[in-house]
Length: 209
Ligand SMILES: C[S@@+](CC[C@H](N)C(=O)[O-])C[C@H]1O[C@@H](n2cnc3c(N)ncnc32)[C@H](O)[C@@H]1O
Image (cartoon, rainbow, N blue to C red; front, side, top):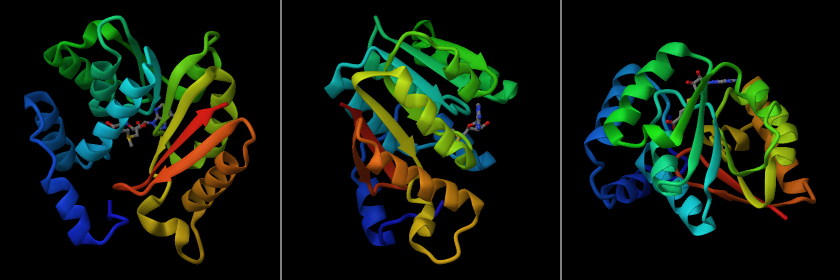
């Protein structure tokens, strides 16, 4: 994934980060080796910060892969908190479970395998945070679904909204078009207050009014 800031600035930002603990560092290595697109430590810290600032206790994560971002959420919500892990790939979920055990957060995480959009649509109680990291073509559909499952004052957070800078290039492909539509929707929605953080691949943060 190409950075959206100039490489020197990107290097500078990452060089300042404290070292990851053993489990997160191992997932980072594993993800790099197997091309699993995880949010990485800079964005992981943002997720943690947003959850702790807002006092979130219930997080629904859409697209969890091998559980890297899930661990950041689980640590942020603390002992009484709950995080829903979702992924369409059972092998990812099995691997993630092992990491959750080792990180000491498995009690806070409910692991669900299947279509994250379907699973979210079945949820009745509102969430404090919904984090969206599924296939980019589905982003507009996630937007329509997520708003009604979020409490007032809750956060709807999405990764990859600048898509290696492709959102600002001519002739967008299908995935980029979906992200462009998504970004338009989150800024136009009257129920949301939206910002985009240009860190790594772009993270949108929407507060539900
Ligand atoms: C970018 S990765 C998630 C990375 C993870 N959030 C992290 O940072 O550690 C996207 C994952 O979403 C899963 N995925 C994509 N679309 C999905 C869907 N509709 N339902 C469930 N999982 C989905 C893929 O299997 C993949 O593992």
